[in-house]
View 1 (cartoon, rainbow, N blue to C red):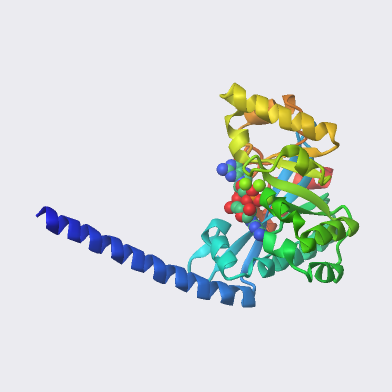
View 2 (spheres, rainbow, N blue to C red):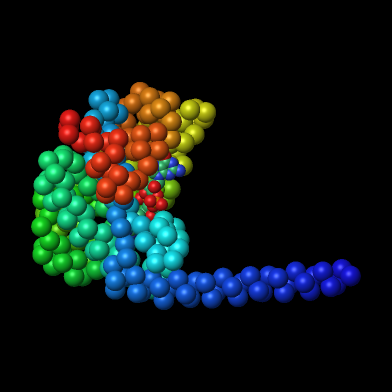
Length: 279
Ligand code: C2E
Ligand code: MG
Ligand code: MG
Ligand code: MG
């Protein structure tokens, strides 16, 4: 009996694995079509000044409008996109959408000060990136690129160094995303003179209950401040977190306590409308 059970479990396992592989392969095929047909939408999550609570900007977050499965978040397809080497294409689609949306906001008389877009490491290494960016109507100071820490480990690569300089020269701000999850030292990171440092959700969440993590976040904010780098807290889920972060000196706040990522129409016609017109 025990033997039988083991065997059943094994068959169950292999069947699951097989289903997973087939599913993965199907998603990969569909993703290539999705890139070709641009089945993506860009959602926006607002960021606010910790002191004045004014809207300071938004982060653009990609969603896949899958023909059968509905709206999919990045964790359902980004790693597959990386395997297929198409994240740079995806980033380009998102950036073009953002630039169009900025024009729509302007035409509607709405003020969204700046949009941060996530840029994959593939794209930052791309030799053709600057030529591509030069063809786009980017307004200096209105777009920033969020880069994860690990990208800067590749800074020895010529294309990365050249791209970082050229990006800044185009008036695009650099933000370090998910800070605190990587292994780079804060000092070496801040030498790059990013405009902003985004403190990862994993460091932000425990600040109310853990004095150690609170001290860590306070130190990060102080070092950034002393070097003229703004700080953004991500994953701010409660107003108590927001208040603590304000006390710790954090400049900007982003998280569910204020708003979730929103599709363009909800963003402009929803609860944020007052904010957008007032600012
Ligand atoms: P990220 O850049 O760190 O973006 C923040 C993520 O945290 C978003 O997940 C957002 O919805 C979520 N979030 C915001 N506030 C809260 C909160 O209060 N609590 C919790 N638990 N989560 C919160 P999302 O939209 O699923 O995106 C996941 C990741 O996918 C992003 O993390 C980013 O690394 C990547 N990504 C998104 N859009 C793009 C893109 O256009 N290009 C590239 N290359 N990557 C992207
Ligand atoms: Mg980001
Ligand atoms: Mg982040
Ligand atoms: Mg994150």
